[in-house]
Length: 93
Image (tube, rainbow, N blue to C red):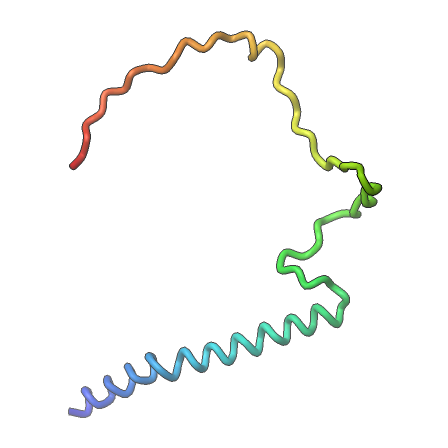
């Protein structure tokens, strides 16, 4: 009987008290961190600022490109595509 009563109390604690307690603790922690970041002068971005110096903004009406991927060598473009190989499959029902 004592075991069942303690099990019932434990389940009620886990179901109702623990989530409310965790929500309060984590909410307080997040608020503290947000306040701390605002005091340090950081932007309210969860990812922070990008590493290194930021490039100057582009003049109005112009586009600034930060990364251009390397172009493929021209030898690869001359290879003919012969088509795919047939793959036999079984339909699973």
